[in-house]
Image (cartoon, rainbow over all chains, first blue to last red; front, side, top):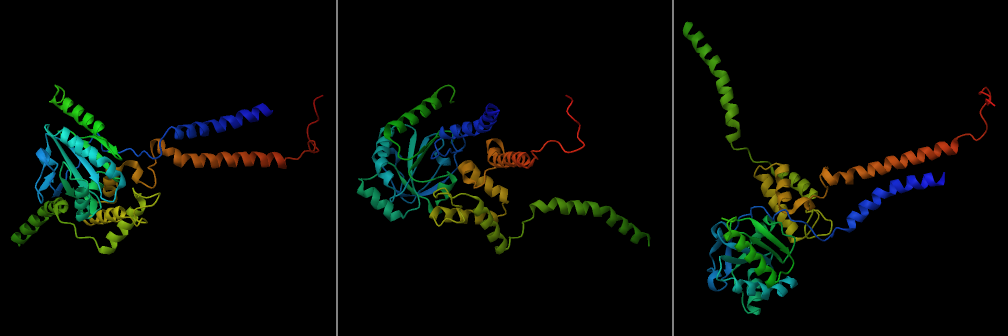
Length: 191
Length: 151
């Protein structure tokens, strides 16, 4: 009789154990974004730091995603109060300089911060290779489903979100992503 | 007299066309702005159903964070502009995915969250009922009048 009870208990417990085991395979901190693969939300934001070289934009100008069609756009959300943004700052500028001869545009979007604080932060770090834009009311940040900073979106020449990176990104990964998108876009399939 | 009848007939004939015209004109007409109290109540209800992305288990309504406040004002704007509750919820879903909903939608894998507690409750009730019946069953032999054993 005892074996019968044990068998029933095991049959009842088994699905729960399977469910919990499945839960252990998931990273609770990883929140999947629905954006990769979809059309990137458009934006039109004002420049408050010009950047340099081919990626430079005049202060006060408006940069819109629609006007950047045909280029790979690297959209980085940052803030002067964000510690991890310090880590990735050099890498972003390095990647922007390495890719400057290609149809690529980097833009940094200031998230929930004061423009003057953003300007000071960049000046303290010896400048930035790409323009910085202001996002009042975090409307663009919400449109991109932002959880925190830093977050980086790579948008392909057709305006689709090709890649989203949560946390500080590094130059090697970013240039590799951009190069693979450019290669796909210039290949016979990408035409 | 005949003119009067004719004009009445003409008006009667025009009535459905006019009515159709009015109905057809409805969607293009500017909807009257919602009263502030309605906008506020719907904003509060929607904000209470959405999770604050930068908090630990707090709704946009309950969170004091800057992003939650900005999201609340965006909800208010969307409601005031005539968007339905489903439109607003769909907007946030399209940006943040299912994570943004404090209550998961009852479909697919999410159904487990709704069905499992019921299944556990029913199983528990069955086990308790079965045990109660076993414990309260009289342990004496069969009452008088019962069939005597065949042997």
